[in-house]
Image (cartoon, rainbow, N blue to C red):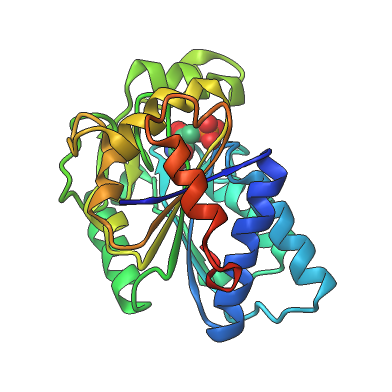
Length: 261
Ligand code: GLP
């Protein structure tokens, strides 16, 4: 079962997850972070940037792999996940740009981009800690419902709902690309620690399905139940459809703090 931690707000979640990442980097200065985009992880990145600055943590050796990328956006497009990861993660944290990879969404090389990305993750020794958001369709990365639980990095077609959800980042809804390249669910499950974050009532159903529903490709988030070390950090609203809420609170409040998440 995933560990479920209910926190007051996104800032509290950010501090908790940043703490786990700082511990990881202190024990492994060339740690490999799995990086999510979207609005959900931003508080974590801010908290982590603060800790790195306040404690002068050396992160020059830290490596990173983004979960996903749109296919076909022009290089340098501000909403490409390459640009987002640079703006929200690499620059504020002071990571070494060459050590942070994003899947290559250039149509010219898309046929082997998935295999190339898998090879790069393998060569880095795998991901130590994977940050995940979850979409309202239950997607993790861009693995929409129906994605194989064994899938690896590949091109996917976005659902219209996800395109509509992401339209807020673009000038017009039609500007949201139709295709993406995303780490597969099988790729994500190889990371050594999964940390799934979700905030707000709109995510409550997807969170309940991920944590307590049957493990099914129809709810890609439910794949976290197959992972030996998965942590779900949610606010009250995102936790509101969980049946075993009282137990999660009980388990967390009785967990020795030194164990972290
Ligand atoms: C996006 C991303 C996912 C993200 C999800 C939720 O489409 N590809 O990695 O987790 O949808 O986004 P948000 O955090 O903005 O709600």
